[in-house]
Amino acid sequence: MAHFETVFLGAAGAAEPIYLVMPADTARNAAPHILFVDDHREMRELVARALAREGFRVSTAADGRAMRKVLADSRIDLILLDLMLPGEDGLSLCRAVRRESEVPIIMLTAKGEEVDRVIGLELGADDYLPKPFSSRELVARIRAVLRRAGAASRAPKRPKLYRFDRWTLDTGARELLREDGVTVALSTGEYDLLLALVERPQRVLSREQLLDLARGRAANSFDRSIDTQVSRLRRKIERDPASPAIIKTIWGGGYLFLAKVEGS
Image (cartoon, rainbow, N blue to C red):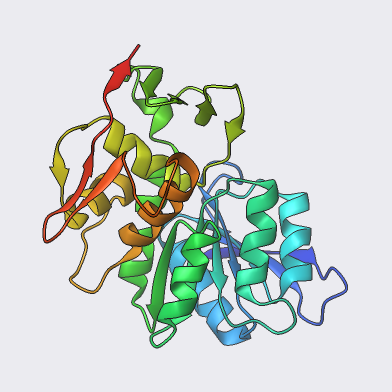
């Protein structure tokens, strides 16, 4: 039988208390620390214990105020953020977090909220998971996103700089620099997608390949998250996003990175 340690972290003036749940034999700072934001107490407890069984430390928050307290007081490795929250909803909180941090975010959405899923990705969420979901799929998504977030430090043979068109992608700093020295902010998802493309220029990559390369999971025929990320990238790197010259759509095939790339 699994044994858990539950630590009270405070209430931040919110109606619901904030807890940290972890396996009793897990060192406090050893396991990835997940913040789960959901206004349903039963869901918070169920997910926290399921993740603790997989070796994660889990803090829970019922709303934006409690979420901010946890973020201020703890080092969080990933946020599970429910879309439908009282007061500030998940989209607003995603936008607020992304303005200040690149901590990975997985949005939890109802099945019919496709438009909101797309908006969440555009605001900087790294992945989404429709409800209802199994604990097995949730754990797989979390591990995939955490792998991507730490991938740069585990790739010493990768060129530090990729130059294309009027841009330089600095993989050491995870920054995109324009020729005039201006730094253009990229979300984790945008960075991972751009890196997958610049490493494979002049090569047609299907949506399924890009999703696997950039997001660490397989796609299904209804998954259009790569299309959303490509649209966001085009708005940032193309001179005319309506007539892209760097990332070309290959109808029925996927995408082609047209620009010549130099690595150093």
